[in-house]
Length: 393
Image (cartoon, rainbow, N blue to C red):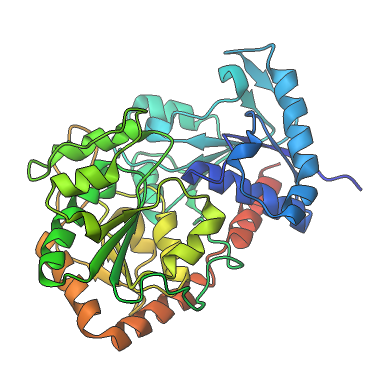
């Protein structure tokens, strides 16, 4: 019996949060025979990092997605109704993702998948919410924001990790004589890379063996300009081709050139072997609409992880599974930042020192984090979304 088609209405990629999310919904639906996923955005195969087996198994998905895009291409900027389920990505103010040519595909049903950071939701957002049978919030924080705005159809479904990649395993040992601090995520004020630099700079002055290992790139490098919001930090630097120049920015802010390694763009499937080289992961993020995929992957690899205790991170913080940053001050912003938190640089420094001083205790924290993450997989996420779709049909 053929599977029910279901449309994913955002881009698929191995290099961005949304892209990885959609990719793993598709992979797990195909493998587990839940739905026949189709993407309504053109898929660039060079943006996918798959194994030869995955390429073979996902060939039907790629073929069907290309055919759907051909059907939608003559209808730019139009609303197209279909008789199959549609997953639509939702961001701030519940503005929805679109298909090829900015077409809007509405399904039977249409389910929203929501990751937002701006907590200001007005009448427009409430009106948009009426188009959805369900809105799946990427964190308890977002669920509470939506419900607080009177949007009752919201429920939290937490994203996951791929445990075939992200799990405790031996290191390769590339940095045997260094104390490696890993920090990853889209470069922007919300992600707190400015706080990472301030804390690491002080830590590295005490510990010359310290090394900052970064994965701070995204398809939208201009977002790094927002880091200049912090007056204690020099403005972001950029290369001639427009990419964020992490090393120059770090050295302009007092980090020695031999104490930072920038990884550039890394496909998701390659991150696990990198994360396991770290002694600690550092995520003093100010606001997370989801649960911070990179932090989840860090924890899943058994790396002791320092997390700001705010917004979506709160879903990850349990008894002894990470080092929470609890000194959180309100964030002043010209948008809705209710629930955001400004981490204290001194507490970040204290947390780094704790890991440096007691590696055995830090290892126990890392293993607790990995055990916690065993229940947060992409397979579970795809199954939960699939069940919501089935119930709404």
